[in-house]
Every structure is written in C-alpha cells, then in structure tokens.
Length: 251
Image 1: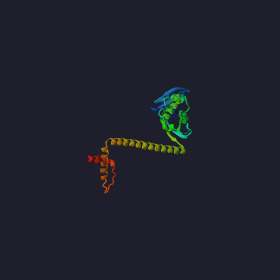
Image 2: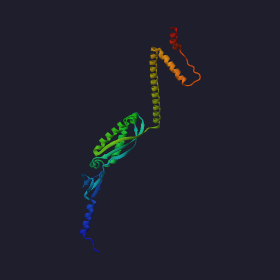
Image 3: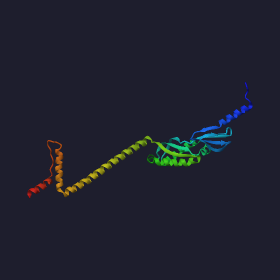
C-alpha cells in the first residue's frame, strides 16, 4: 500500500475547496455576497463562485410573495367593531437592500401590513369599508409601498378578503335592507299609479273632444265580453251613449 503524500493531500483539499465554492442559482434567485463582512453585491442567475472562507452568500428569491394578513380587530370611525383580513402581494426588487436594510424582510413586511390595515380601516366608517374597498386597497398599497421602498421591496397589490361583522350589526343591516326594498317598491307603485292617471286623463280629454270615441270603446268592450262565451251578459249602458242615436231619430 502506498500512502498519500502531503502534496497530493494538499491538492485534494484545494480541489474540494474550489468545487465547494461553485453555486448554481435559478433564474429567479440572486446571491448577495459578503466578503470579509463587506457587501460586494448580488450575483446570478446561473453559475456563480463564492470564495470559501472569505465570502459568504445569502440567497434571495425575486418571485412575487403572497402573504395572508391575519384578521385584525378594527374599530371604525362610527364605533363599530369588526374583524378585517386581507392578502398582500409583494416582491424583492433590490436584493442588496432587502438584506442590508432590514433583518427579516418577510416578518417586517407582515407586521407593517397588519398595522397599516388596522390604521386605514379605522379611519373610515362601516359603510365605506363595505362599499369602497377599491379605495381602501389603494390607500393601504400606497402606504406599504412607501414604507417598504427603502428595503428594496415593491408592494404589487393589496386586497381586502373578508369583513366580519357582529351578529347584532348583521341583523340591523338586514332590517335596513328590507326597509329600503319596501321603500323602493312603494315608490315604483306610486310612480306607476301616477303614470296611469296621466294616461287616463289624456284618454278622457280625447273622448271629450270626440264623443263617438266613447261609443266605439263601448262596442269594443262588447266584443271582448262576447268572446268569453257566457250564456248571459249584463252590461250597463250609459244614457250618454244613446244620445247620438236619439238625435239622429229626431232629425
């Protein structure tokens, strides 16, 4: 058996160290490299080399992160207690700042989103939360984007998912909605009666100018009654309808 010489051992160690410094990064990954404690910038994607023992690498993911904001207890401006949760979409634009400026950008962004959600929703009334979600989403996104910009993070989208109302408030809103529907039904019925009365007034005016029109309407009613195939038909005849015939006989 032949022993391995010191030179061969040293060569093997050097080869292992060189190979251990080779890193493969995916298209959406970046390597933030520190050399003796000082940041030298981001590398990648593809194959990068990190000097073993001298350089240290922190891998960053540049894909969009979907983060669920837990339900937050919010008291609106009109003193209604609700629970609001949302979903947050953001991504790392500058991996160097995301590593250097904040300790844990995921945790920091989550905490900031929760605080901002409570603050923005607490500034509005309940009706605004229910009817103006797009406005609230935009406001939260603008605040978060401004706060996370120094960290190299871009907030892409914020969407309110659910607003949980107390049972008492749900019953009150149901009564309000029912009363509103009844009010609309009464208004529509009144408008229909008003339009019908206008049409009847117009018809009366036409008949008043043309007396024969009333007689023709009477004859048409007789035709409609006769089509029902009744054995006996009682139909009141106004005296005014006979006036044209009486005048004709007198002449």
